Length: 262
Ligand SMILES: [Zn+2]
Image (cartoon, rainbow, N blue to C red; front, side):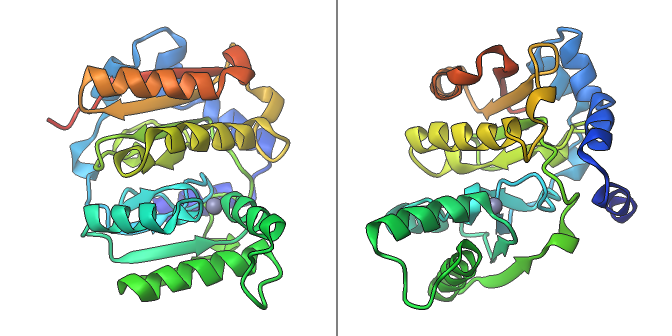
């Protein structure tokens, strides 16, 4: 099923992917005005739950089959200290992945280039992504895997939203009828200001000409869904992420829910 779906999506145009997203049950319910909490509760499928054992980029073109701990660029924008803390907090992680055409790797590369700190022989963001990821794999005894374009769910960006998980164990793949979204577990591992910045970057990709762009509107917004364990952390994150994405006005909708896994 997943493979058929992947083959069908793979060469789809952005217009086709957009049409498909309009049929997502979760988006249909949200458009009717049903509260996110109820929509998630209703469509949560505990049978799909698996443990998070690989680090993947948040990019919605990556596989995201539900066993991925996802964060922009697999963590390439974190400091070494932050990455170290993440690995220690999630000892089930066995693998780290890099992927082709990574936006986070481009940001990391540009920053190092500007500071004159690029490693010797590294001349492109792609090379840097592989270099950084292989280094982390070696340092922490993780397996390394490269996700190339043929393994993408679709060649084009087609994210209708962003799932931010603050519990360290929830995933959009556990919800039936979800549209394709960016996935980030960064909130469960690193500073909330990082999470807000990451949300801004990912929303920018969706809104840009590589993503659904102008198709996203107040009528069909980009949904940022924040999953938390309690109201306090949920409200705090919703507020930080709303501030960080305020420039996109009502083309973005930020809402929180309490994890249905009790
Ligand atoms: Zn990426």
